[in-house]
Length: 118
Length: 112
View 1 (cartoon, rainbow over the protein chains, first blue to last red):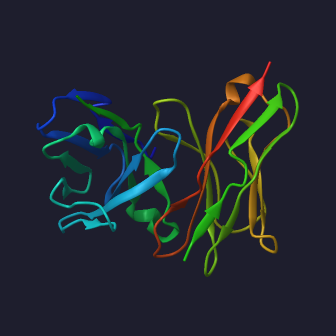
View 2 (cartoon, chains in turn red, green; view 1 turned 120 degrees about the vertical axis):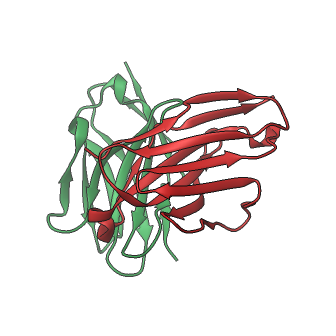
């Protein structure tokens, strides 16, 4: 149980284009999903928290117009990197919090998406 | 504010020897502590967690960790390391109503 998927696992795009990454909770409902960014050999940095049916909360320094987050259902959140540039190249990881385990804040992590912007 | 320290960037251990990856934390209230492992170009894999109860927590792949409240530590241990344990290990802390805070990670290399 508690499986989170991400699609695509790897994407290469040209500078200036937009890329959408999907995060799905496969066997549980997630009122809250999280998006992290990880640079090589570094820890995970929280970008934003998305709650189903409401606007995402972005961490300081994260451009909300560049990283659009939609959490339209209890099992799906999407991150769209708009007008991508090479400096947006990174490993993006989502996680989801199970409604029933919310008291312990436990998060279940997706396998990540490697974005490369040429 | 919550914080996690993993004082060692790199831990090297010979195969078959015991391993320890250190983690200390700072949090207000009761901590919920987690260990994750990450292989190259992969997401985080859950190893174990401490929420409440017994201070010694047993997890996946033979790993265990001991919650020490007085030392605010949650070190990860394994009695006999395998080459396949070589990976990046993250400690994380949270508590009720708070986001996860991850440590900087420790790279474990198990030498054959």
